[in-house]
Image 1 (cartoon, one colour):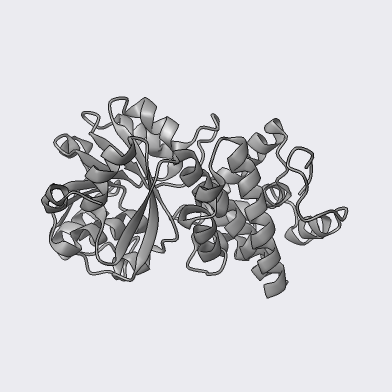
Image 2 (tube, rainbow, N blue to C red; image 1 turned 90 degrees about the vertical axis):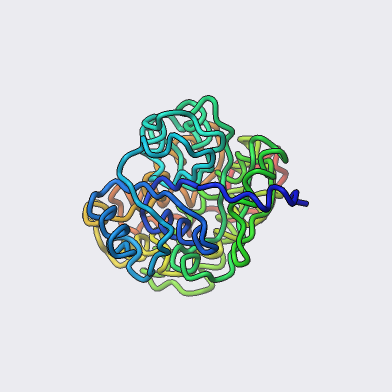
Length: 344
């Protein structure tokens, strides 16, 4: 249960990152009139939010609450105790390092693995904000639905345990936004990172016109890869079977509202990966995560053939050729002894 005194507290919350997801989170937090400070990289986004209560660049469908104030200065976050970090994963460390002090709680809302180091975002955040308690918010969340106030449930994994949960949960919970407690930061992060890559794979299936049977099979086999990778890194299977793993996987593998699915669909239709990435203002995190994830899996001896296939397609190989090779692999049992399993 959440203590009543915690429920009554209405401190200002900061959201760092005014892309679609960060803006949607700010809108959700402001739905009860709470003051929300939102950091944006682009000056034109700051101006549009403050003068017109709109973010036409990233979330044009939403009319934003007047209690949201945008800023381009990280120094404005010095007095805030709870900060939601929603920047692209690859710049998270650099942005957090620009804060004037380590806030009490940093809630990570970006999904990815750091290129070059292979670190999860909670490790990146601990280095940038060594005095902060780190939490991870992840789950099946399309930004436009959250901004519109449609019912949403997420995992809130707290590195600071129940004490941190009792601080953060009442501050972010709303009637249509329901967080569920976990203490498994690794599982929450891996679920979000791996599902982005698998969503690209499902988009490729859509773009190639391979049908619903193929997509369902890919989701199931992809979930097996997520479990294998997560458990090898110490994640709990129960976490990966929950909102931040399987729940998020099902959502983003089934809709063009997912940036990663849309990227995969375009690849399946024959578009160039390099051209697609160069032409996108919004970030499909799975494209950055795929090579890192494929490399980690290979180094650790974890079978992830779907991830490897996505990485090959992003590297310029023909989607049709890669899928044909995936389908021609030797037949095997659906689930083997984990101690003996070498292939997916």
